Length: 104
Image: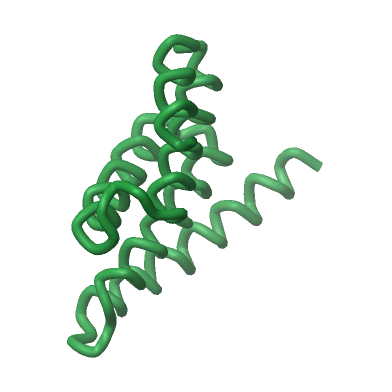
């Protein structure tokens, strides 16, 4: 069952990577669409246990989201929360709390 779930996440990661590549190449694609795809990719990396890459991906999404929306937007809050979840899984509870608070 765990192996099946990991395979599904690997397939999902491949699809998200392909979508990101298409969005980055398409001049009609918005930065918001790219940021949303990055956020999804970060979630998939987190589910695969690849926490370092998940954090990097969320950070890239966060920087784009802050440029697009400013600091006070639901997408920014969601990304801060997602980063808090990753830090919690890494056992970095102080850092997790910091990101959870930023999400409020």
